[in-house]
Length: 489
Image (cartoon, rainbow, N blue to C red; front, side):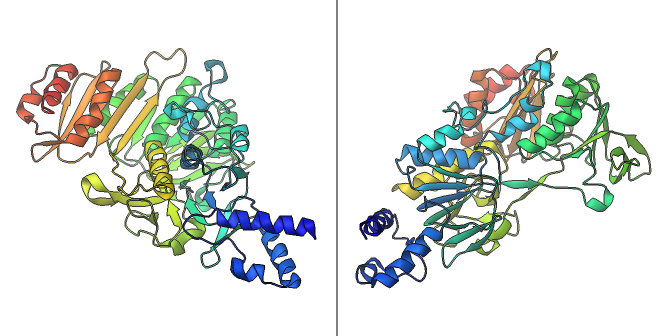
């Protein structure tokens, strides 16, 4: 009986530590006072039910194991609320890592110092500690790997995983990110030799293919397409980018800026087919991809195809929590609370109020993943009540492998609305300024100095009045930045 009594005290202690009064007792179990007055038979029933949950840490559960989960874990640790309280359940086989590396350093050839785990576990991307699997153990964080959540019971506050595990939560943070958009199977989207990149397994498969490839086709002219094509150049492979838009990265770049980058890629040997649609992917007798067939009937030979045509928010089993039909994802407020008490959403999957521009947005970017995780957990664990005030930020770094004749690194802050002013000759610097109603709304800079890059968010957040005519006469990027910087006062 003494061992049973010790178990009861442990269970009671765990429940009393809960914040917000959220109960972790089993549905058929009553309150603490009921437990104390229960018969021994009822008590044994409770013990079996309590033990039926697969997770030991039940106060806080994070679903998802990407960037946002790693930075959320760090914030729990900083507040002293992780040890014995936090559980992370993920489909990944690895502890959270800095996902941008997968289309950058991870794809470098073997002789050019490619990135590999554990080198880029969170939170090294922001200068923080490398949180290896051992780090999570040391901090008392329970990790459940390779077992995605397939259903949620909101009323009972439980989750069920693919393997059948039943998990209990007090507060739940959804950090499931996005899944890569795929070509339909009927047009060859699942053929051997066709790749999508979202996790380490995807990247490993692609690296294996690049080592044997001769002709590579990258479908998509966005971030993924540009970064993967640049990596393929490092392998000295025959590389073609195909996309339906008029120029690279159309959702951000101006036509003029897009052409500058297209010319750079062409100088590196990349062939570009823009304004093209894909009809289907062709295969040989063994079922391996051999070509990309275009809408006009022409074909491009390929033994490796990488599809980078966007991503979809991984709402999975959480549709009942409340979705935003306009931007996709799970709707949250400025503290990342969903419409369901005790459930939060962060990172790529969250549709949140973009305060600075007074609209709802969903941002697929590592910077937002990090910041939203910190803000959400801090609000959950403390008295913080100020709403999230995010400034959109995007960047890319390509051709950074050893021996590259020119490294490319640009940053953008703000909103790409209004008229544009482009200054510089891309040798290597170039800057683009977006101006609306006489105010600076956004700014992009290629190959800036650390001090110049640090100026960009100040400009975009302040939205100073800018003399467009004067800015257009600037003879250099440095002079242009000085003109808009003087507007800050």
